[in-house]
Image (cartoon, rainbow, N blue to C red):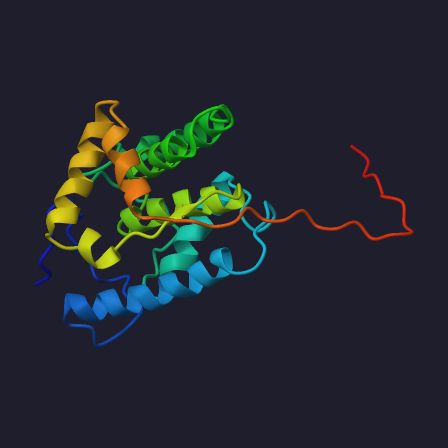
Length: 214
């Protein structure tokens, strides 16, 4: 029997598990971590563009599939029933569209606040059967990197276990539920990795820029 940790969705159905022979949670964690690393290499190495991370509805689901698709058959699919966490499943799609629309008006918000809001709102929707926390943290980091901002290197081992950091993390999420994003901003800043903004691509000499039609 799988032992869940406070704040996690209990894993009651293992029918979607692609990797056979897993008996311990630590074995599952290892396979998931390897899958997530593959996704991270796509978005945190090389140049990141809107084409690679368009931040539309289809891409939100695809990111989850990229992170967990080697391990779970249901990766990237919205849950089809209510759980102890998240919004009613019939509201998931609409809430994700609302989030994407609201992000268009975040231009003047400080970056720690943008990261905290995106992180909290995406995980509070809880669109998938599992992996929502890791998906939401990567989502916020991709958003920051896409805009040339520092991103957050979360200590996954401590976020995913009962520890002082995990207690602070869950407390920050509960505060954000009430509209107080200060604790979540502080956690983002605590684990922020400084990065340089991407340099503009140089224009080739001797050629006039081409204009695309609207």
